Amino acid sequence: MNQEKVLKTLLAPIVSEKTSMLGAQNQYAFKVRIDSNKKEIKTAVESLFSVTVENVTTSVVKGKQKIYKGKKGRRINWKKAMIRIAEGQMIDVGAA
Image (cartoon, rainbow, N blue to C red; front, side, top):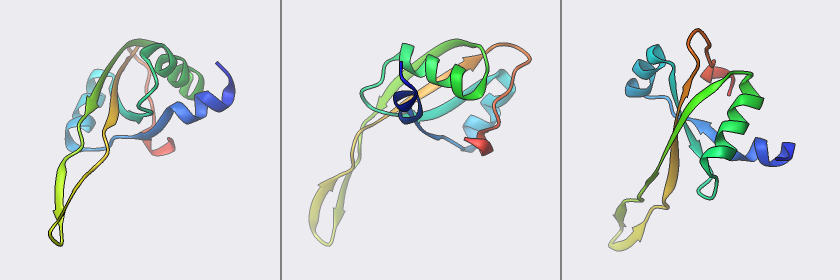
């Protein structure tokens, strides 16, 4: 996988109360491109953060329907990746 695709696979870390508690279990959450697969996500995380990825779980989050000034609209669908890294390693999500 070329370096440009590696940089574009991971869009942003997901920082919330739930994901910060998962950090103690060596799990991290990232917002990724909708067309990326688990192998691409694993390669991107390993090359960007220099860690060993044990497991990648993905899910597609469906966009909500919203009404703004009487007009119906829909937010876009997006993909979430939960990544488990090897014991003793750490990812600084502030640097992502």
